[in-house]
Length: 265
Image (cartoon, rainbow, N blue to C red; front, side, top):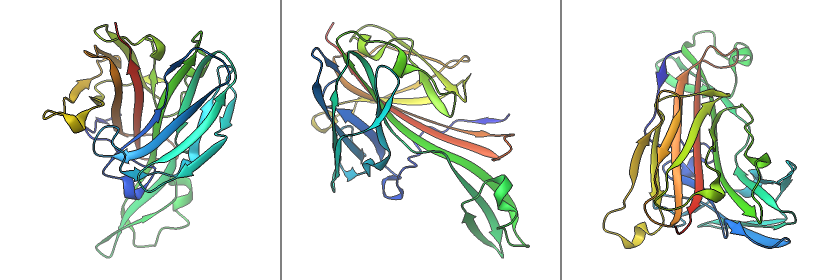
C-alpha cells in the first residue's frame, strides 16, 4: 500500500470549516468531585483556541468511564463557536468526541469536467455515467477529541475502535505534565502508521509574536514522542492519505485533532 502523508489537517466535518483547525475544548481536564458539570466549546479556527466558526454539535458525544456513550445534555450552535454541557456522574476518564461516520466520495472526469458523487466502490457503478473516466473513490472522516478525568483516571474510554486514524494514549492524558515526555502511537484501522506529520500548538497564540507551533512526526512504528515545555492547553493536528485495497474505497483520508492539558510540574 503506497503511503502519502498530508502535512495539513483535512477538516471533513464542515465545508465552511475546511481551511480551519477543528477542536473541542472542555472547561476542565481534571476534576475532583463527582456530579460536576463540564462545558465544552467547539469551533473551527486558524488560531489555536480563538473561536472563529461555530460547528454543529449534532455529532458531539461523550463516552463515560464505563464505556457507555451519551449525547450531551444540552448544546447550542453559535456563529463563532458552539457549546455543550453534560454532568459527569462517576469517577474515571471521559472521552469527548466530535465526528460522524466515514463518508465515501467518488470522483471522476466527464467530458473534461471533474465531478463527484457520494458513493462507495460497490455503489458507484449504478450512478456513474457511461463515459466516466479517472474514477477514484475516497473514504473520508475527521475526528476531534479530548479527555476529562474525575478523581481516579481509568482506561476504558481510551480503548481503540480499530476503525480509522486513532491515537493509542500510552501516556494517559491525565498524566501529561510540562517538561516530561509524552509517548503516544498512531494507528490506522488498528495497525501502526509511520511518518504521520503532526502539528503541535498551544494556547496564547493571539498574544505571541511567534505562534510557537512545532512540527513532529511519528516513527516507523507509529510512535509519537514529545515534551510540552510549558503548562497549559495544547492541540495536536494530524492527517493521513493512503492508497487502499479496501472493497469500498481506493483511497483513505483521515484527520484527527486532540486537545489536552499539560499540568504544572
